[in-house]
Length: 334
Image 1 (cartoon, rainbow, N blue to C red):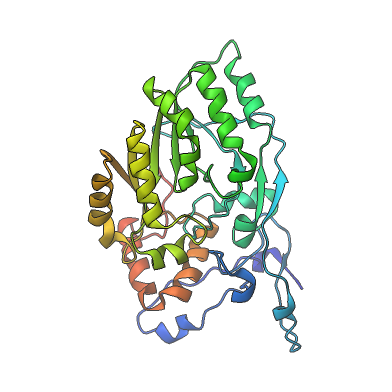
Image 2: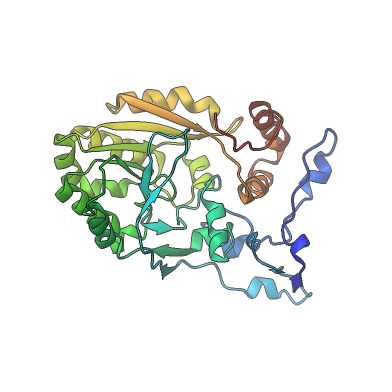
């Protein structure tokens, strides 16, 4: 059924003392039954914020919701005219990046790229994890942009939005072709990923590293395999990521471990253990990113907390607000 734009996004109220029983009953009107979202991170699929209407599933008593098919991964084509994205943010260390894919099958519930799916008329929820888009012409576009007479080389960041080594990269190899172009041009690159698929490209990365043209940051959010499964359902296990760190270091590639994001009362107690594990793998650099909850990510994360950690819901958001000046999220620089 259709609903007005004013009702299409339901914002969950902030937790109040003594409201635990009420909170446990909260559910998104766009919630999806578990059987349909098995192996996914989000629990709902609300319409994007730019849509004039929203469709909300309603059980008419005939159990028809249970007959709906599970969410399957589909891949569309992104016909971008340019592949290098520029930014002028004073808060980050790079001014250009490449995103070979839109959407990410890893399904990390905390991903701050989720809201970008609304630009496509899709949901930042389950659509973000299942309706993916690839840029098959990215290597050719990159070669053209790098050869422009007015182009000035600076490090290109890849993986700062969605993961370039998510599962569909294994088949399409867009990232490997991009690296081939960058190696040929002698252009520096910095990669962020949580996927062990990056080891497929050790040959290119090691050659680039010998010329000081490549570095990698691999994200290890937790060492708890059970927590990783519900937080990042289709990403490699923590143990395999540590093995990837060892292989990258062994290949002579400058590598750091990223504790990202740090979620208070969920994984913040693991910071030291993750750093110790990274050091044992030979990594000499480390970084972190605090949990960010822009736009739809806030409510998606709340729904996830209520399903998996209902007893920590109020505590997590209380700590987040302490760090954000009383807000769930603050987008200002600094």
